[in-house]
Image 1 (tube, rainbow, N blue to C red):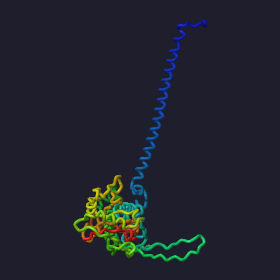
Image 2 (spheres, helix red, strand yellow):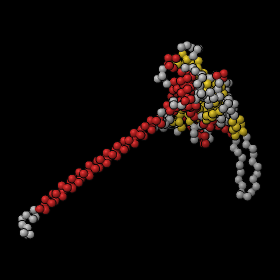
Image 3 (cartoon, rainbow, N blue to C red):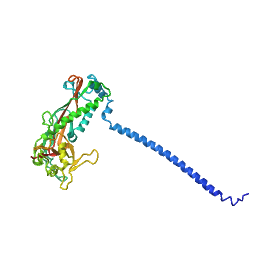
Length: 389
């Protein structure tokens, strides 16, 4: 009974192998299913995290005003005063009264105007901007380095020379804009009054102050850097507040050796100021500059290779300012400077708005005003190119 048939006993081994292989294949399939299920869960989690990040990035990219609309101050100012002309609910009277010409806008709306203004106004993006509480801003600037010396640890310190200072008091004036909208537009709840008003005010302010920062005469307006005194003398022998220029070219064009003059202009500036320097010129001059070549035929102009990066000339960014003069005899069409160190803009932070529905019916005018001043701060930080003849 216990003896197995020798012909049938070996035949059972292949069946056992097939059974084990079949079981192993089922195990592989089960593990694949479990892996695919786990991968699906991970993909779902990744998609959820990505969706959250997208929502956060979209929220961060929204204009500040979209979050501000819930502010009671902004809502009262926009709905009550701007749309309907009611003064009873205006909560934004801060430093301005109706007798002085208008109501101060809420800080959030003022910040939106300032943000758009910075994007539009060329020199505002480059210069040093300070917020002041009154029209009489003054700043002391050291005209020379503070005296110093070397001593041992226990040696007596000799008295140093007193540093010399100059007072900077930027001339200022009232900057105004007067955009208008129909009452029907204001009555439309879908009309975004805040964004429209901020954009209109910023555009008008940018146009006016751009011209003043470049060529303003200092009478009820900023003193433009091109209206400041100029001299061909070097920094050490030039009076404080006087800008240095190099003369080259002629009225019909920039001249054949203009590339050499531009290199010389760069190196008339101290190395410390060159770190943050940029070129300033209008589009007509820029068209001429882009044609300049070196002796081996290479263009001096270097286009920005990355989106958002400025074009460069001799390694320094170029900023277009249409208020710069064209190429002409005696003009200063090109400026090279560290305007953050060289030019000061002083402004009173509060923008005031007077609603005027009577002057031009059926349109409602919004007379916006802001006090802005400007002046050269460090004359060694701005260099000019003058067309000689």
